[in-house]
Image 1: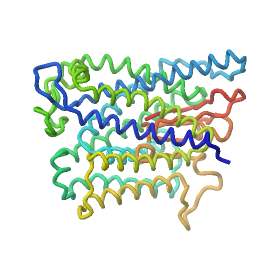
Image 2: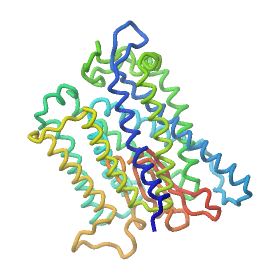
Image 3: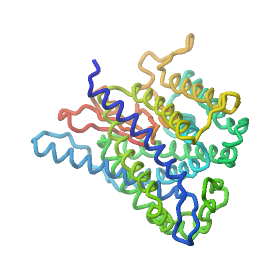
Image 4: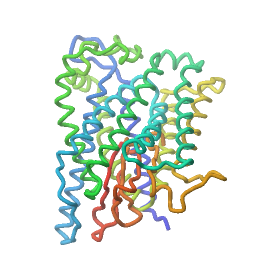
Length: 427
């Protein structure tokens, strides 16, 4: 029986997940004077925004330590994980750094709704990698789901090409490139999931701890990468079109320029507000995602992620980022793509069963790789490999569940304070 607490968790996950994408896009829309000259230009700093995301993930480590402190204060016994070198989490953190930064580049070039939907393509690559590298069997219904997801992504991707919305074409002349970049990033996300499983499976590390350490290592690695990127020119294709009262597209001298980013933050108060929203929302999204999986179930989380895509689309329309024309074939193509993506996700997870298609007697989601396309509806932020919170015990190498949105799973421990997850991801 659901309680107000359950509704609070679901609403918290929906709000923080939506805010995470919207706040990042909000910052991308801003013009401000930077560190060089007095001309305004767009805030196009995907790697600085990625650093903010890692900071938000690192806050999960603070939450984890607070849980340990509370358990110690109340003398609550805890089942601790097997000894594990947390430095190894720097490997998936490096993948996370690349994937998130690449996705944010794509987000600057396309709409927030298309960005959120196309993240669902992680299903395709995770399914392929699970067969190639993890030697997991995929059943016919899995492949039907994968084909549907691929078809949905094609519809979303070509929507910009068939669109007759001139305003959108002017605002996003490189939309197709942005969409392709987002899909390419999902290959990195899928490889990260495989690496996480190889590294973490069997150690039963608490989910918040894994997310927190990946955030910490990600911040360190990205800080070093920012030094190198300062001396590399930015390709013109990574700059969006001139918009509003901006006098220039973006700073072309540096692939990433944190000095310019902070100068723009100081000259436009909206940018630091949006950046703070990104940091806090990713931390909250991880926490609420973990709690939803623990107290409700993974199917509920998937539904919430799908609703999140609708919320992002609706807000984008309300604030004028997306303009809907009912006579625009691009709108109907994208809408069809969304529903096909959603159908592919529920088919893959065997939530909707296809008549006359064989399903294994045991729950397919626990006997083979179950993918929650949370990025479309994350996740992952987002990609997350999680333990089975419902079973009351950690998930081993034979039954991981993939999810994209940035939520990990608490397995029910005797203490009731911390859960475990053999594999984790966020966003």
